[in-house]
Length: 288
Length: 273
Image (cartoon, chains in turn purple, green):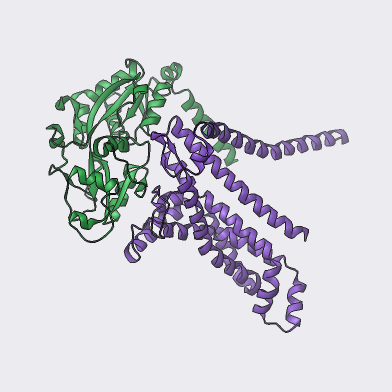
């Protein structure tokens, strides 16, 4: 192959790869544009306040309040974090600080598998086991904030574990050696030196886990009960922003459909804020 | 390699679907194609009808899709389908479509088979769903919250239920929502304290339908107009039905078609008129 041909080939490949890189940006832009075009007109028509802070969702009767769903989305997210964060962090600490090579060899692929299980399977297991269990032994119908939090808590485990694990292992070895040289036990070195050093990464893992929990749809529809009220009890059913869209889209038309896209606009804003926060936290660590 | 093959297959399938409606492909395969979409309540019965129809008329192919009454009505208006299915009455702005009532369907109020409450007044059902009655004790059973389940906003079954049972009252926000007849049945079949409503044709032994105002929800009671929670199943066409769609509609309205619907627990129109 003559040099000019090689150069040409190189240039073409570079251009193809550039196009690939920018296509994802294009998709993101298209999704944004599409959701905004479909969702924004209703904000003008009904008013931002009546949508975001409205208490009643009855789109066929002209009421588009999604405030209860915003609250519910946050409730399940924090519920999931309450269950997922300690468990995930514990697992990450064990993997990074205590586990030997044998155990790592066994645990890491298992966790990756956990991340790969489709959400509908989690939802199905929730309906078959968790919901009846809660109904029988704790009370209520079982379709509840509690059931949703448990299912989502398990689903965000892989996110929390893998990112916290990376944060913990990126703490320089010299930190641990220093602590041990001072006569600290392994737990003292972990809890007083390594975890504080990896703090931002651990925080970022929780924020990304929240992003995953807010965005989860299928499993939530199956176990949340989807009632429109703000839950006042761990055993009350609830409806999140994502499940509102998925539940009603097939039947919606006209303003109802636009209302669902407005739900999408709000959801998109929440996810954007969460991602920004996570990036901010991660960037701060890197600069340090 | 296998990815290439999969892509090729996808393109071929998409191509085949894409030209399904045009006349040249019909000539090639010598098939008459009828596309139907709409209500999830009507779909299973339309599928059954389509199966029998295609056995009798091998040159026909009937494609049935769900998506909901509203989606069916819209698809029909956009002419993306030949026939739309609806399980609710048309709204005034949808009245441009031609309606054909293929049968009537009762909406049954269902509870868990172990539930001793076997009879309710219509007003009690209304109070349960509007949140006025919250406890089974008020209906003469044990002291336990009622787990009522409704359908999602926009569903044909919910629309009919609101019109026939709720009248002016709203369904309470605290009531659980499921997005299909099947999911409602699943909840009621597994939760002993649940109550929900679904198409009478979907009722089987896993749930039990309660009597309303002392009338058992049966085809007979609906025919005699004793059971009141009844709605029509509609086929919709843009203008007067033509060509292949007519052949299918005529089959559905024929004695054979109506008999199939009757066997499924629905109330045929030819008899009920």
